[in-house]
Image 1 (cartoon, rainbow, N blue to C red):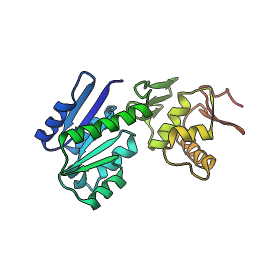
Image 2: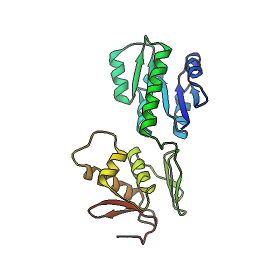
Image 3: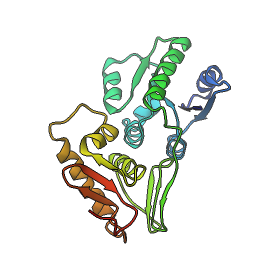
Image 4: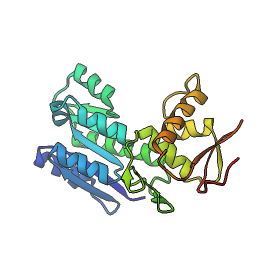
Length: 235
């Protein structure tokens, strides 16, 4: 698996120091200095780690951090020039996976980065195997950009809705239980009503796919759901 890292920092010198230590034969490291460029690169590429300057994140009240956390599961390491306990808590609650405030050494930063990447790789052994799914001339599901197009029009779906749809579509024809879908899509601890949570999201997905000529998501009563390519392939 090739490792790709995105460094978001207005301080070019600081970003280059980190980049020099991370670049290797197995690492692609990109540096951006603006929030606009950060969003563009993050959405269009798959990264193994994001290293974000806490000062840039604080400028928009951590909106960038929140958007990145909602869009993908990429680990995010925040680096701060200060050691503020309250700000650390705000950043972690906004979605940072780790927060390092001064004083810290470059070696400590790199060790934390490597630990986060290792955890991500172990949790996503097949994350580099992402293929665009195309069903006829109607439905396109692109995991690299996390976009869904129906009859040429992009659908507005949430992160969990995308993960749910991609899980079903990449296992087309196979029956998947609510418990299996929950384990694949939701990372938090088990909720009280797993069936209810999954059914609610399935209902929303079906509504957003309503303009389709095919009923893609079918109930398999008492078992779960199955993604079907053919409208006549029913229960």
